[in-house]
Length: 110
Length: 165
Image 1 (cartoon, rainbow over the protein chains, first blue to last red):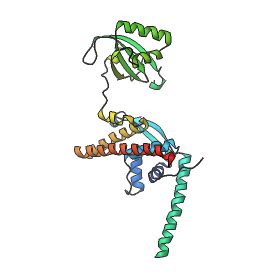
Image 2 (cartoon, each protein chain N blue to C red):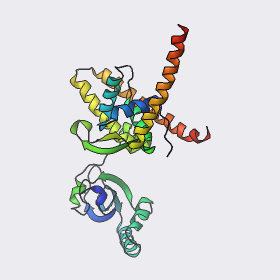
Image 3 (cartoon, rainbow over the protein chains, first blue to last red):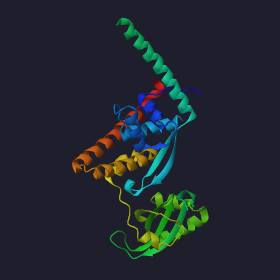
Image 4 (cartoon, chains in turn orange, green):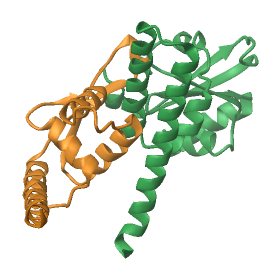
């Protein structure tokens, strides 16, 4: 199976849910924590991206509980799939190589 | 018992004396996928519905009632329990009114809409606890709603043009 290419939002979300199962607000908080507040994902952006990632089998979701302060709407918990892990590993390799090359150019010209 | 496990179609007749929501007369409740729609019937229509359902099976009720061949004054209520329960359960429930939010977000898939809406409610509750002002909470909610629409439109467009790029 071809490994899908990831965009920045997908990389951030997969990083947040690697090794654990989180729901929307927890993912938003985790992304904020991982990026030290430099990236904030809106709930709309998060769920449309997660929906696409589920279709691409990068993440798997399951319905959770509905609490009173959610007005009957259930939580949806997400975790990374095997394909998601491979796609994230490949994105990490590509970015590390590209950033390493860029750093060497900057270092060489200094 | 979960709604999914129920018989998909259930019909039940009852006489309703009427109130501000419904006119008096013979009603039939058509329960399908957890939602009951109540139709006001004439006696002739009731006889025809009974005969046709007997002849062609319960799905015939969908064609006749949802297709508008029979019944007037349709009203929807959500059934939380088993549809074979007492018809009186349906009578006491008020019809569900669709909010502006529900109307606007209708075209967004449920897998996105429901958890997004729940998280938004939770977030609004958190902001209230933090003592944020009402205009602030309103602005935050509005921006989340706009972001959902923007992302959804962008995603849909990418899906359409993606295969050709």
